[in-house]
Image (cartoon, rainbow, N blue to C red; front, side, top):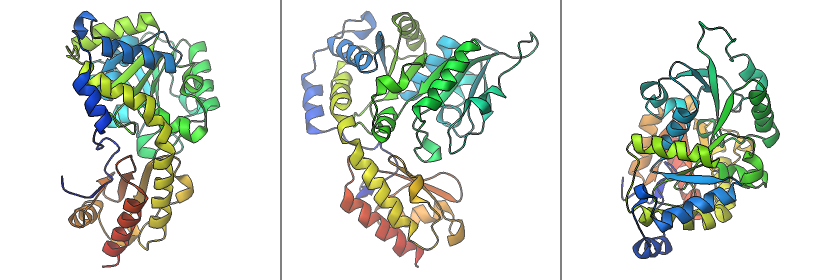
Amino acid sequence: MANASIDLRSDTVTKPSAEMRRAMAEAEVGDDVFIEDPTINKLQERAAEIFGREAGLFVPSGSMGNLTCILAQARQGQEVICEESGHVYNYEMASMSAIAGVLPRLVVGEDGILSWQSISKAIRPKIYYRPQTALIALENTHNMAGGTVYPTEVAEEICDRAHEAGIRVHLDGARIFNAATYLGEKVADMTKKFDSIQFCLSKGLGAPVGSMIVGTREFIERCRSIRKMLGGGMRQAGVLAAAGLIALEKGPKRLQIDHDNAKLLATRLAAVPGVTLNPAQVQTNIVIFNLKTSGWSSSDFLQTLAKRGVLGIPVDNERVRMVTHLDVDRNDVEKASAVVQEVLHR
């Protein structure tokens, strides 16, 4: 698999650029547990600046970032409202329950996108013998809904109404720069009403490691303590932050290329008999298609595809996900779609 020429499993599979590797080798470092790593500090300040926030915090992964924000804003025995196919519920090892001691309260979104109307029905009444709703967690873009994007006005209504009800709102913005590219908006404007934000430096932006949390200075200091508790106190982590800085400055500028390639991939795949897919629903860099009418299971299909040098991942027994990124180009997308057609025509 490591030798496959076209890897569409995720935008996390990208390799750091030569520029990133040089920056990592030359990074000025210190002990970040003592808050003395200058490159880490620069990355955190820059992330906060871009999002119009007071402070930022580097974390090893988005999962740790989301869990840190949940721990900072919800107590044991409370509930966190999230979308049923969301990453924070399905792909983070049940950490909100196992570690934070909170209960996920699932709501079904339309193409992964929640509305205040759907959320409001799940908020617990203020009765002492019912677990109380502490937090709402939104995901933008929504991974398993195919990279769908929250309209900013929808997210802002959720934040406004939640705050009126005394509930905080967290954004799992792992791919928030993809959402910003799709909407043609700035991340600071899109996210200003959220209480906490986590975004990824390695998904789409090209860094080898890491995510960021941004928020108020007081909130970030609380998160710093929680990060340490979770084992995320890193020492000379500036070698990672150096790549993160380049990803943050340069990565967002080229995301439209990934979106265009995803749209091309979706259009080509939709024309293949046995593939069920509406290219009009592909908004960013994630393409999810259904193989039910082909008679193939997703696992058998992907194993056969991998032998021909194309990789994807199964969503379930019928659906497959493919993600475009900076290490695949238009030619790769055309080759991949041709291989899919070849396999399904067998």
